[in-house]
Image 1 (cartoon, rainbow, N blue to C red):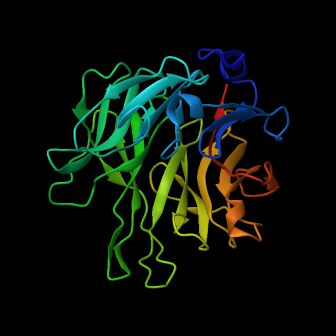
Image 2 (tube, rainbow, N blue to C red):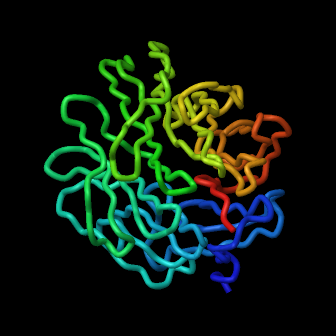
Length: 307
């Protein structure tokens, strides 16, 4: 039963690393142990078609939230991991929605959207009510995407920026942190401006450590095939930035294990054929003992540890 495979006790304290949930291909949801064993998957193609971007799992691993443009109609959706109980939370006309995530307690959803022609982060209740803006891009380039909640639910990390003109990155995206009510926004990273052909677009995909003291993220042009990106870790106050991985390969979508001892991520490293797509790797939080978990055919992305 899929719920038994994915679900767990959302209130229980983690006693180990947890299990890795991830997307496989365009419409598969999978879960496996930290060493890649005991892998189980379910395909949701019959219900929705294929996912546009990364889905986000609820803290208990029983539900996913995602933006979607396919068979069921455009909008922001929540459904069970077995593809049952699909429901659309937002159905705005001509409005972009991207990157929704659950709060740490599963009661809220934060996502990127354009209402009134302004790109912002928004937060709402898990049933789609009480929608409020969290960031305002008026006057500065702090639009916000790739949001991630701190374990205690008090802070949200996100990426913002990424302005490119005539092939030159003028304002690469950086990692920011704000309080969950939108107050006290702080910029954490200062990515280098690149004029190289790989068009390094800066910092993205932040994820908190279980103790909330560190953030892991990727820096580089992960959206551009054949280019390199690395994983970095930084303290929550913006100090002590550390490089965790080196090229070749595009490393992205890092996530901490529940016990804080491992980091899982998606990468194209080791691929001799670009059509092989990204696969999953796991390593220690200092970048050591990197192990590949998945193999072609097909690709794996957007991993996260669940109970």
